[in-house]
Image (cartoon, rainbow, N blue to C red):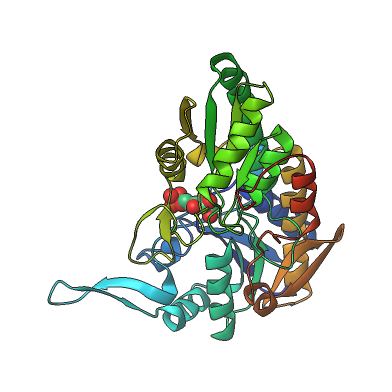
Length: 367
Ligand code: F6P
């Protein structure tokens, strides 16, 4: 028999419900193919860059039943991007260097035939760089933010929406009891998908998203209207990347080796603005944070992630290097990573979903 072909699997960037289901899908499909072994690198590329490398063989026993579990059995990190790897020089200064050629050689030297990289936009940019440097790579789209283009959904998004929606429902009953304005902040980075889906699902009065900068006066007007209607409480969903017209996002400093600043706290910024703008209601803020990334994937994401895993391995068999599995128009397919990376998937401010939300009485704070 020919020599076994070893396939390396990495999970990079923020974790996401469904990662384990993808890993299991890859391993199950590989075991049906014969002649392949699947290995995982701990903490994305860190495991393979470490000396000695930290790798684990992913066989049937290792993946049994993991599709229902949150997180990733091979761990992850959003630090140590090989395209801008932080190194401390002799003078103690930290700078970044391109480790991609070295990493490609390292993966080949360790006997791997190909890489399946499960990750969001940052991870898929690394996939493309590795592919251009000569490594056979297949991408799998992961992120609760749903901001990768060429696919209708990334796995993890629907679970995050479900988590946010459940929390929203709880905030509605307490808002109602106290006649309060509840502001709930959700994740999503520069995309308002989680906020938009949650606002429609929960029945919010106001939904603020990065794609539609808001005016504080407009938000206040919608809340006051709601109180005038006699309902006596209001629920606002705000995406972490939302910002006022002409204003900036609420964020802390970026970190070396990471591709973006850390967003968070806009619920508090907004509450302050509403108070200063003269809204007399009692306001409370809830920041859902990483609860949206944790826990077991809902059934939709288990299915999406499992099929992505199977399809990713089939792309290995078909040698469709430099491509990513996608789910588009109710069908599974694959597209070139260059196409995926050419633009992000943001909410269309004049698209049907936003129009429908407006039809449901949801204000985007831009009227
Ligand atoms: O990209 C996924 C995401 O959860 C974003 O929604 C959020 O801005 C970011 O990751 C948080 O990253 P970290 O876990 O590093 O704080």
